[in-house]
Image (cartoon, rainbow, N blue to C red; front, side, top):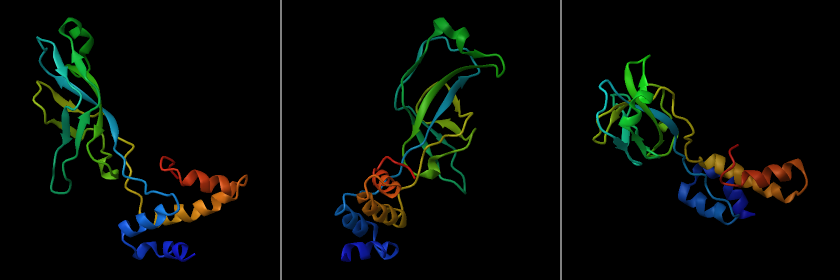
Length: 178
C-alpha cells in the first residue's frame, strides 16, 4: 500500500526512484523511440560508375541557431548501378535519384523532422540528399506521470474479463502506445 501511495507522488520523485518502484509491479518505463523515413540521394551529373550507399551512411539536418543538427543513418545498403542509370533519372527534377530508408540516431520526438530538412551527407559520397516527406515515429521517453498512471492502471488488470481489466493489462506492455 505504501508503494502504491508513493506512485501517486510521481511528480516529486526522481526518474530512477520511480523506475525502481514500478519494477516491483512488473512495469518498466517506455523508452524514447527513433524516427524513420526515406531520403533521396541525388546527383545533377550522371554517375559513371556503380556507387554503393552502405547501411549506416550518415545524413543530417542543417544546424541552426534555433535547432540542433539531427543525424540519421541509412537502414539498408543500396547500389546505384550504371547499367540501369536511366531508371534513376527523374526528368521532373533533372537529377539521377535513388531512395534510401533512414532511421534517426537518437530517440525522442525532436527527431521527427519536416520535409526538405535533411540536406547534408556526412559520409563521403558523390551525392546530395533531401527528404521529400517528413520523418515520423519518434516519441519521447515516458514521463513520470504517465509511468505512474500506467502502473496504477495495471493494478486494475486483475479485473480479468472486464473492460478495465483488458485496458490495464494492455497498458503495462512496453510496446503498447496509449
